[in-house]
Length: 379
Ligand code: GLY
Image (cartoon, rainbow, N blue to C red; front, side, top):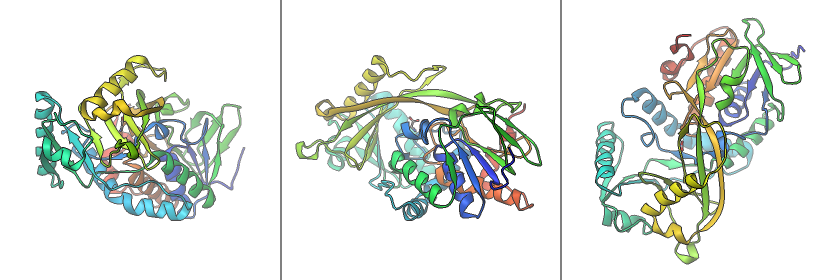
């Protein structure tokens, strides 16, 4: 089906797909988003919304670290633009992050993290356990030390999703939910997207932003090297009237705790490679609560709210795939693994710019995306 009214089809309605679609629409491009279930049904909904570049990378992943810091720096303006465009809050909180140790091994790891952060000019401060409790009274008095990172912020990932959906619609993006795609057919002229019901759509460019589903779509050979890594998480209810409150994001050795503006305390997350289901298990919940109680004992008093599980889209090297793929007409914005919300601004802005420049006949990739070119993987 030729539909000349759309120049770009984005496959996937999570934070990456909606972000790229919204940015392209800002540039005057006519965009359609195809989402197999409902927007943000995957990792975006399940995330915790932490904007903390050094917290979840290996120290050798310097390009990814630089991309994370670049995206963190862009978040405040991105959040303001998104809030203005959608009329909704994205729950941006700048209270900072506390990374804590709870034994001798984790203390050594904390010291290494501190050295890495200071070597890279990140404004962080080393605190004794007592100083950490002064800052965040719900922390266990038994913790030996903590790092406070005032610049590591957070957003409400679910609020971001709702805002992106509304902003994309307001800017003219055609968002189709419950529209599963079965394959993408590359082509320099007009790549095609074949829906599960057999309908064929074409456009001048296709952006694959299907997260953990990216490799299961047909038509791309080689398929993007993205697999799902299961994460289970849960939420408790903060209750400031009973003294059950946290201001900072708290990262312990075995769980992170993220206080949300809506009164939930998100506790995450398991990391289960090669587990295809999204069941929440007794063992998963047990380990998360155990890890949370070890650093914030008052978790025991909090009301239990919900559990969930989803798959993170992990590439072979755990870094995202951003920009022109090996397939003519097909761009990638996928493989964000643990960093999809952090990397939302840089993904949206730079992948949209790359697509836009290509459509304008002057293809060019921003230097910041160069290390993340999908072509880095040999077929
Ligand atoms: N970034 C949170 C997680 O992957 O669990």
